[in-house]
Image 1: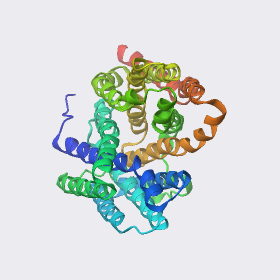
Image 2: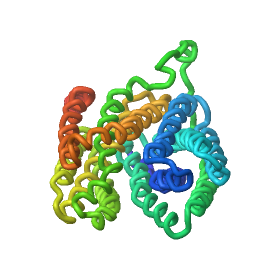
Image 3: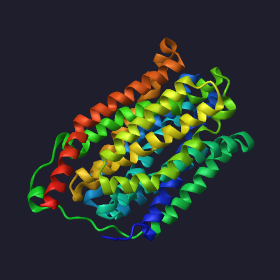
Length: 400
């Protein structure tokens, strides 16, 4: 039962994912300003330059999941990394807003392919009985990158300019490619003759049905978190807490980092419900604290609870998507989950931005807290109830 989790390849694939997300976050926080300053565009076009990357990412995830299960996952990863090197190189050649949008879209596709590959490879490497723990540790690479990436991107932008930020991203992706090249090939589980003879068509070619219930939950979890990621700075300005807001995502990352060893082990030992329901509660408390924040202490306390909540919900949900699917469809399950999670986080800023003039920031975060309560109920009906009954049945069969 004590299969090794921290293998060399697991650590390397986690590092590759970390480097890719550093690039993603360092650009996502600066590309809007780059668009406005370089091409005298308005905020709407700046937002489009940031958002079109998400659309490209969804396209990359949509088509890569199916082939990761059929081909060697390492090769899919390398294709994505090479495409990332090429598209990041194109940032140096941009001469117009139209070209920028095309490059952002292509970069999104490349990122979608590579990040889906790293997620699938990590899921395949992790021992079956340690899925919750392993995927949780792997997901920390994204969490830490979400704290470091924006800081690095903004710092380079302010001190050295946009072009040096592109240079940093190019150097980082080259390092990621070199590391990815050293990862061993993953054993590909052959598809049964019966399945090979069956013609998989329509939506089943791109989505794994067993992963859909928890992926649907992830959409709304992503919407709630997008309200924090997209509007925290603007909200902090209205309540005069900009200084404390600059530490928000650092506190969020530390909270997730500290809790991850415990939550992953609880997931594997006691089942997903013992992790998911407390995480929904923490996320709701964090959003409620954010809605009522009047000082720096409450703002950073909300970061702790949001880290415990959202920072646990997403990797745990990914582990559920993988565990619920056949072993030969892990890649498709991973891409299905990522697509739905990205869908919520990607389109929410536009939708929530339309609500802010009507609700105001405080009521927005109260609304998101209520949304999380609703999502926890949705989780119960889509997965939690069945997971409880299945675990109860397994326990009874073991005690007989």
